[in-house]
Amino acid sequence: MVKKPKLDNKLAILRQFSSQIVLAVLVIVILIAVYGAYQEEAKKTEALPLSDLVRKISAGEVVSITVSGSNLDIVDKDTKHYSAKKEAESSLSQTLINYGVKPEALDKLSLKIQSDTGSSFWLMTFLPIVAPIIFILIFFWYLSRQVKGAGVQALSFGQSKARIIYPDDSGQKVTFADVAGVKEAKEELTEIVDFLRNPKKFLEIGARIPKGVLLMGAPGTGKTLLARAVAGEAKVPFLYLSGSEFVEMFVGVGASRVRDLFNLAKNAAPAIIFIDEIDAIGRHRGSGMGGGNDEREQTLNQILVEMDGFEPNEKLIVMAATNRPDVLDPALLRPGRFDRRVVLDSPDLKDREAIMTLHAKKKPLGPDVNFRVIAERTPGFSGADLANAMNEGAILAARESRKEISQYDLIRSVEKVMLGPERKSHILSAKEKRITAYHEIGHALTASVLEYADPVHKVSIVSRGHAAGYTLKLPFEDRKLQTRKEFIDDLVVSMGGYAAEQLVFNDVTTGASNDIQVATALARAMVTKYGMSEKLGPVALDNQTKMTMLGPLSDGGISESMSAQIDAEVSNLIKVASAEATKIIIDHRQALDQMSAELFRVETLEREEFDKLLVLNGLKPKVQKEDEGWKIL
Image 1 (cartoon, rainbow, N blue to C red):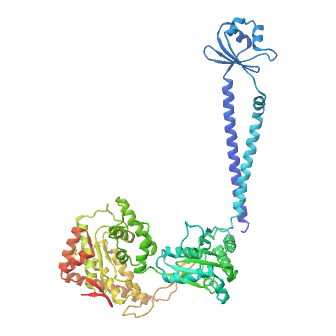
Image 2: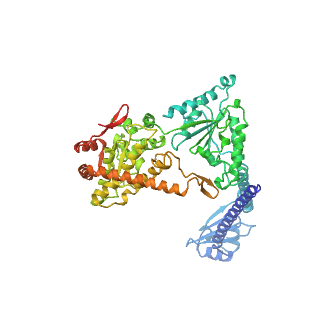
């Protein structure tokens, strides 16, 4: 198994050599064909005996004769070319006179003498011999270079593929000023920067700076950007690569690349090594993940050894990023390796505003742009989502040939990132449009009546993505905790569209399918994950599974009777929520009809317009309160 890479390298070199031989043979065949065609063309010139030449000259049919050595090129009155040979010992004139040509006939001819110089004679003599030899030598020289390159590539197969960003590369340099939000993460990493800049003060007091820093967070929260910012602040080389770049199908290649990476970093120290998506090689050993690939485990073992192999005064920091810290091997996380763990959460309201301000630096903004309003509309957005929303806003403005980005562009871009682009070609019929209007107002009306539901920011029946319409509910403030009452109201709001369709049209459509899926998933989480079931109590009933070589395997911690009780409790929560939504729709049927008619007419209701409709129908909009968040006035 170990010799397989060498054998494959030899086969690759042999294939390359064979292809070069085939190419050379083709070139030689083409040259022979061209030379043969030239010779064939030369053979088409008719050869004249001297006696016939004398006869033609005497008859006045010859116009000119060109003499080149003993070769004669003859042109007659019809511009036809002939070739002939003269006697080498005598001149052409003497030869023709000896054959009986009169001097008067010679005077009418145009005689041209081409004398071969020594260089042209030798060139014409040896060129047919030397040219093939030169061609063969050039071919073998080129072939040797190709084979040498293949050999060098084969020898570098185990070398690291890390890219390096040097501190003097201003085009790729990133600092903490280029990273908005994540204040706590930047504070954690500031001492890493300080150590790389001035390690003496730490070593003198006996402090040991962590060798490894693990950045953990959801996709798009800025893990890679923050690692580059640390290198930029410390002004040290930044070596970065992905975890998947270590692993090959050949055993030992990943470990070899790890050794080469650390040697390269030690030579460039002080430096930072950054391994993105380290879970590709750092998964828990012995779990059977990845098909039992020994190469992955050998690569992980080599990383563990290398992180133990350098001293604190070597000024080398290993940083890694993952959004799956739960699958990492415990040996990676023990003290002395990745013992500093930095968590990057999704940005809060102020951080989202700062991130959008940062991404808007090079974009012309209109006077109506208010990032605070946009930040309120984007709870749960990551930094990458916000950057994408800003970019989509710029694209929308450019598409409409405007020089500035307006607030309306940013609002549309947020909805595009959240729900997908508008489906302008998906035109609803009048009946479908009316059903969708009642469905969405059913959601919005229940959300406005219920105390613990989030306020409605927008209602629309313009198709986006897979949805025929949508109701946008957003909290006044970001929340880290949610109560059971809030979950119950969310279930009622989810069933509001279903209840409105059933009550108004005495039928239901497929438009409520996603609402039912969301409500069912939330109800099951309340029962099994959050312990919010009054019947089953605060018990964790998640059906835990673990990955094995045979696939996901349940731990069997829940009995069949308990599973039946969970299903019954989930069904009961959905039925109670549906009944509550139906009651709200019946109690506010007049408001439902009037607001649905207005939505049918204008297709989109923003928060201000929606709140006015609530007031006209005797309902009070939700407002924020200082201490308790918000309440119904």
